[in-house]
Length: 143
Image: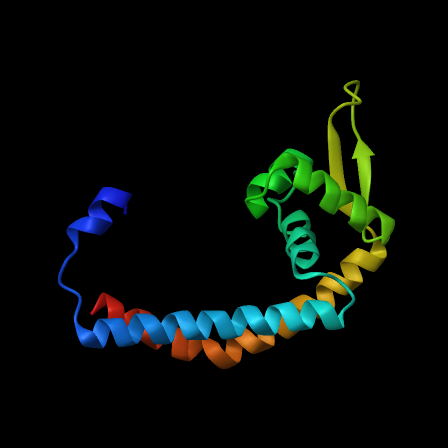
């Protein structure tokens, strides 16, 4: 839905406001869970997101710093700093392929892969718990 169409919607019921508020609250609870899980695993939440973006990039393709910046919706120079910190912690490595040494690809190390696997298992478990509630809220909104 584009921004103009959003403003054309004027009839929102009290029940829809309540559902939207509940949905926002549920999503925020999940994000809080995610942030806490990342901290317990020894990574910042944005570092966890970066590890997931690197590992979850479409099969057979390596992700570049520019693509990582896009996936995380951050500026390129911020992605460079994030990558520097992940390399320093030994969670990822930079790789060069082909003749163009300027093209840098990112890959998880074994430590990064193990850390992400533990975090992802915890997130899947949490989503199994809260998923039905979120699904019911979305169904109510589709109404």
